[in-house]
Image (cartoon, rainbow, N blue to C red; front, side, top):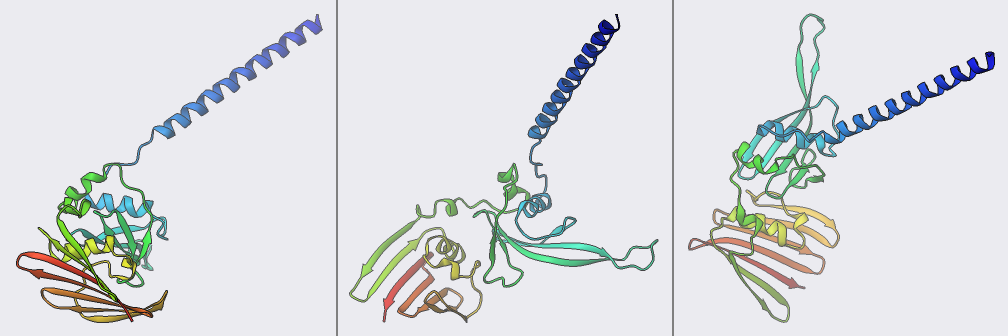
Length: 256
């Protein structure tokens, strides 16, 4: 009789454990399902979009960072990444002081993000994830979506002239500006990584002395931008100028 009672109790215990295991497994599956159903938060303002972009990026930043839009110029957004510190000695009163973490440049059309803290002229590329409704960003931030940038070859007429020591590429752009043709040049010029990310506004010479490149000289006037790359074995010049309502670009490769 005692043996039978023991066996019954043992069976009840095993059955109860199995039910608990199944219940635990089901709860785990439901929990995982709920996690997988979570969506990337939608953006409802330009500030929201910028914060989500910086949050998803590989920029080094504190957990409690904040962002503010410093300025929006044409199709570029300059962002201040900062944190707030309470420097008050009085526990009842706060004295919040901003501490800048980084300055970031965001180019929505090109979907590119740069850390410009050290040197705005030579930014460091950052990785980031696009917000769920990225296409709404232009409207939220008041930036006109530029379709020409997405298909910049459709409104240009180019030809190449080659001699024994030189090669010239001559292009005429319709419905463009000096600044927009400069942005196009950033996408199709071989050594564009050495160019400024924004249209240059002053004449200057920037030294590199690496990878065979000695320096880059910018000669800027009201209607012409001339950029000269000086290499150890020759020069390359880019001339972008206005001419009768059109924009002309000449890229000339010359060997010593």
